[in-house]
Length: 252
Image (cartoon, rainbow, N blue to C red; front, side, top):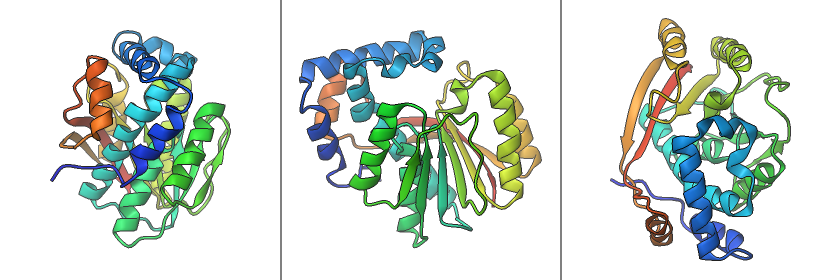
């Protein structure tokens, strides 16, 4: 069965982001964003992915929904359980990852609330919009994750498409923090693109996770994009087929 977005969510995104931009402007933004992800990933950590209105709208309309569906489907298939309701999303962007995990928990009859941590002002605003549009409870903290301290009684920590953008020292610190959170009872989910060359740090993280009894998975998830998203992708020369990702899951 193909994964689909929550009813009305893409319509709300489209109304929000096409209010002041044309379809052509967003299409150009998506082309620039796609080129950045494929050919110039070194610029992402410097904020290049969100440095223009067209790219911001393209991210919200195209990549954000795919990230939400990917994490929701991964959480469903792994049958993740929350010992506590709080879901922390590190570098949350538009809150796609926490929303996906929280929706999966809600479907399984588990209470969930979200805490998104995001330093970018535009993304933090989008995260609040996502939370409201999907009827989720929680809050968004505008803060760099370098200085963020995980609260006690965390049910899950999700880092989706975030760890790859950290500096090596920060990445090492967060590996220790996430392993400690798992030891304390949290479920930790790390999600990154399927391409291995973009994440040279992955084997070390995988080894540490497997040593703790966690698991690594690669995902090719069938999905049905909304027609308007399909048209946007086609205009930008993209073909939204499967949702591709890999994950590390560890903790309770």
